[in-house]
Each structure stands twice: as C-alpha cells, then as structure tokens.
Amino acid sequence: MPALDDIPDAQELAARVDALPGVAELRAALGGTPAYLVGGALRDVLRGASGADVDVDIAVEGDAIALARRAGELVRAHERFGTATVAIDGARIDLARTRRERYPAPGALPVVEPADIVADLARRDFTVNAMAFPLAGDRRLIDPHGGARDLRAGVLRVLHSGSLRDDPTRALRAARYAARLGMRLDPETERLVRAADLSTVSADRVDAELRLIAAEESAVGALELLADWGLAGVDPKAPGRARAALAVLELEGWAELDHRVEVVLAAALRDPDATAAAERLAAARPARPSEATALARGRDPVELVLARAAGAEWLDRYVREWRDVRLEISGADLLAAGVPQGPAIGRGLAAALAAKLDEGVRGREAELAVALRAAGA
Image (tube, rainbow, N blue to C red; front, top):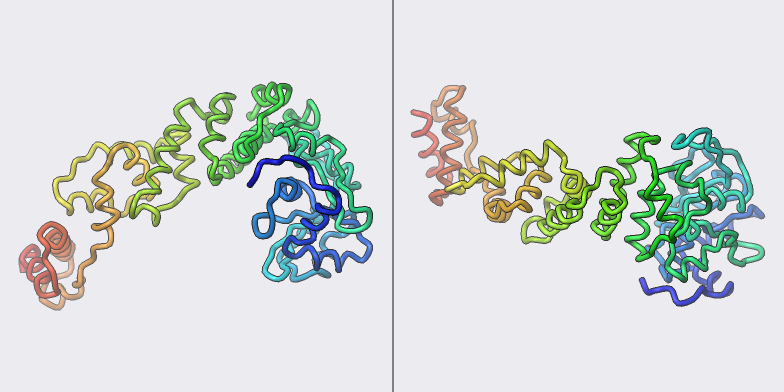
C-alpha cells in the first residue's frame, strides 16, 4: 500500500467508498438510516486500499440487523449487541449499532448504550481508527480527533489519557498497527503504552490480541516493539526466534506444515512443551531414514518447525521425502499369511517400513517377505 501523501477530497473519497464490494447495495437499502464506513476500513481506504483488501465495517445509527436483512443475506446477528454480518454478492460486511462505552473498572469489559456516530468514534482506540464517512447525505469525512492529520504524518495516537487504563489490550494493538502501517507512536501514547497494566485483563483477551499479531505479515516487527516496551512476556530474543521459525516455513516442503500463528507464538513466547520437544528433536542425530521417521512421525507440526529452526536439518528430508512413505501391505495381509494377532503384527510392519525407507524395498511381495521374517512367521 503506498505511503499517504494527502487525504482525498470528499468526492474522491465517496467514489472509493462506493466502489467497495457490497456498499452500493447497502446504500440502496438504507431507507433513511444513517450509516458510515468506519474504523480500520476507512483508514485503509484513505491509504489507498480497495476491493477485497478492505474488510468493510459499517456503523449504523439505528437498527443494524434490520439494515443487514434489507441489504443481503443475513449471516449472523447478535440482538444483544446490535451487530450483524451480511453477505452481499460474495462479500461479507460487518454492521454494528453506534454506541458509547463506559468502563466500570480498569480492564473491565465496557458497559454500552446506543449513541450517535460522534460518541461512537470517541470510544475507539486510536485517532486513525476514529473517523467515519457517511454512505448517504452530507458525504464529508467525520474526523473529530484529528485522525486524518495523524494518518498523513504516520503517527499513532490514543484518543485520551485514560484509553489504556480502560483497555490495556490497546497497547498490544498499538504494536500490531505500528508494525503493519509503518507508524510511530506519539510520545504521550508511547508513555501510556509502556505503562499499560495487562494484569487487569483476562489471559484470554491478551492471547486473542497476540494471536492477531502472530497472523500478521509484520509479526516480527510487532514483537520487536512489545519486547522494547516490556509487554506480554515478550523478551528481547523473541523476535529472532519468531523470525527463524518463519524462515523454516519458506523452505521447500515445509509449507504444508504452515501453522503460522501457533509457530510464531510458540517461538516468541517459548511454549514450554513445544520448546522442550523441539530441543530433543534438534539434539537427535538419526543415522538412517527409518530412525528419523520414527522420531518425527506423529509430532505436532509446531514442534517440527521449532526443531528445524534450532538446527535439525535432517528434518528437511523427512518433510520432503520420508514423511509420505507408506507400505503397500497392512496388518490384514500378515493375518492372512498366518501371523497371529498381537505384537508380531506391529513388529513386522515396522520392519517392512524400515526396509522400504533404508534399503529401497519395493512392492507388496518384497514388503510382505520382510514383514513375515520380522514377525517370526
């Protein structure tokens, strides 16, 4: 996405918004209900994004669910929260009733009530996400907090000094947005971010934000910021570990094991179980393909990626060659040949697989001969 040189005028911005998937149908279904493109969707449109690159997010001063039903196929609705998702010509659009929020305690979930668009924008996290553009009527940018100015300057700024006290997970979002958008925090926002107390929010909420970071192309950059700020248990070596793990997913044969989010989180936060298993694999020195396969087969993909990042180069051949080797025979063939049910079956099949991997044994008859000898038949 190109750098932002200037904010488009109202006419150009209206054209960009109206060209987004599903917006024309939404506008036709408004029936006088005020509705606005808001948040990250508008921010990205201002930066030049278009089409499927924009996750359309609509704020509605009225019944968002009713508008969704008029505009297209209702995918889901939450009456309690006044939100809906609608499918229009293959595009999915999120709609929500405009609201204001009140936080009864630091880190607590907010108490919400219906409000107008200006109050709705005031509850948001950063100025660049606190703008709106009407789908109808007076079609001019609504920007009460200077978001366009900050977007043009590449500055990430909270709306008020209590923002991160109300919701400390905004500090994690700051890392995600700053890394993705190439923005810097203004000094006051950085001070507030460094002082954020994540202990006032649930571990699930922190984990959800970290998973969003891990899914980003700019995840390593976000982790660097979190390490610098001393947040969420991200230590100074976490970005390097995540970078090394992600590099493994780029190697030939490893793409099928792409569990990006889990890999980034396990590497960055040093998941104890995955890390211990990976270290054991990295320390192994299998002498034959069958030994390598016995060590690696059935392992969690995250463990394999972390082990390769830690130096287990023998895993390259496992994922490219040995992982998919299968016998042509089965236990039923050994039973039919007179091998009794029991450990001998497993012993015979294991020997046949080892012979196939290590010695190049091929064909049902050859495999069966090896298996029967090993089974003692």
